Image (cartoon, rainbow, N blue to C red; front, side, top):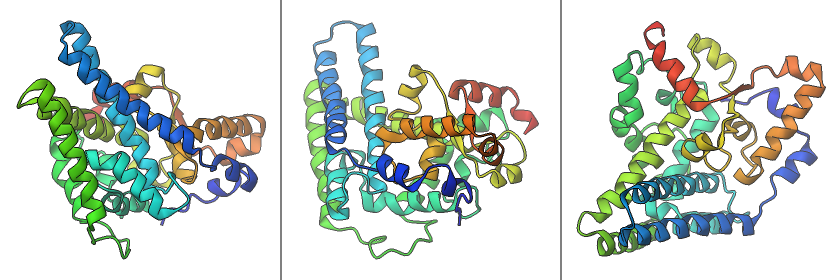
Length: 319
C-alpha cells in the first residue's frame, strides 16, 4: 500500500489540512451548473449556425466543459461533495456521472485502489503511466488516442476486473445507480437529436466525451505519473508530479486544478477548489525551510504537459 510516508505526515499541519479540506457547497454547485449552462448554450449557438469558425470554437468549448464536469465528479469519488456519503453519491450521480454512463459506485473501487497502490504493481491504472506499452512513436499515439486502452479501462471500471478492494457496494448495481444514467441519456439524446438530427447524439455528446473525458484524461494521467528514467526509481520516488502549466493547458489537460496532482494524491480530502492554495502553501514551506527542500525532493513540478509529451515522443526510442 502507498502511504506517502513521510511526506504526507509533515508537509501540511493537521490544522492546515482541516481548513483546506472544508467543503464549499456553493462553489461546487456553481461550477457544476456553470459548465452545464455553457454546454447547452453552445448547443444552441451551433444550432443557429453563425459561422464555421465559431462552431469549431463552440465544439471545443463543449468538450472542455465536459472534461471539467468529469474532473469535478472525480471529487465525488473521494466523498468531497458532501459529508454525508449517501447524499454525496446521489449528487455526483444525478448532477454529473449519469451523463457519462456511470456512477460513483462503478467508478470508486478502481479509483480508490489507484490511490492506495500508486507506484505499486497492484495499481489498476499502472498501464497508463508505464513506458512498457509506449516504447514506439506509434504505440504511444495509439495510447493517446484511447484505442489501445479502451478494453482495459472498461474492465477496470465496469467489471471491477482489477479491483482488490472488498466493499459491500462493489458489485451491486441498484436502481439509484441506473436511474441517473437513463435520465441523462434521455435528456442528451433528445436535445442533441432535436438540434442536430439523428447523428447529433454521436457527434455532440459521445464524440466530445471520448476526446476530452477519455483521451485527454489518459494523457493527463500519463503525464502526471510517468517518468523518463528507470521505472523502479520512479516507483521509489512515488511518482508525485505537479504541473505549473499555462491557462491553455489547464483548460485542455487539467481543468479544476487537477494539475496539482501530487497534492491531490498526498491529501485526498482537499477538494479541487482548494488544491492551488495547498500547492502554494507547500511550495512556500519548501522554499523557506531548506531541510524540507532536501527531505521532500520527491515532489516534482514540471512546467508543461505539451512539453513533456513532445520530449517523450522525440526520445521514445531511448526508453
